[in-house]
Length: 145
Image (cartoon, rainbow, N blue to C red; front, side, top):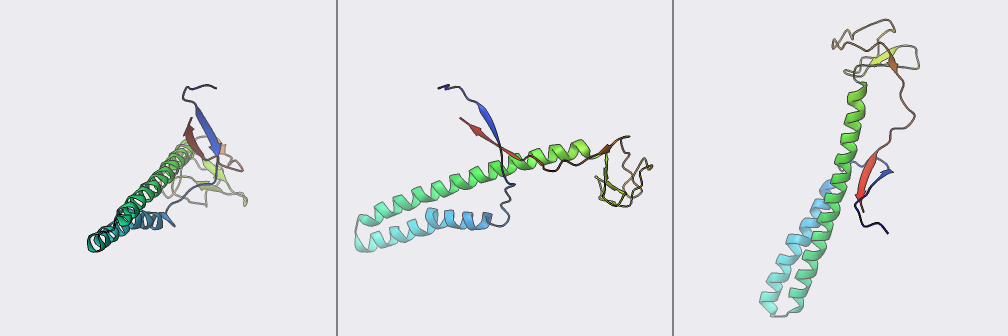
C-alpha cells in the first residue's frame, strides 16, 4: 500500500449549505455550549461526577459535529471554485438556445442573434465560436489519502 498523499476526484451532487447550515451550527452549539453549561450547573448542585462525564461527552460530540460541518463547507467551496472556473472559461461565448437564438453568458440576455459580435445590454464582446453546453457538469471534491 502506498503511504504517499494522493489526490482522488469524485463526481458528486452539488452541495449547498444554505438550507441546512444553520441547523448544523445550532446542533454544534447545543453540544458545545448549552448541554455542558447545564451539566456544570447540575454538577455544582448535586455534587455528582456523572455530570462531568456527560459534559465531556457532549463537548466531544460538539467537536465532531463541527468537524463534519467544516468538511461539508470545504467540499462546497471546492465545488464553487470549480463552477466559477467553468463559468469564467465561457463568459465570452454565446450559448445557442433551442429556439435558434443565443444567450449572453455575462448578463443572461436571451435575444442575441448569431451574427452579433457583442451583447446589446452589457457590451460583452464575444469570441467567434459558440459554446455548446455539455449534458452534465462535473463537480468535484478532494480526498487526501
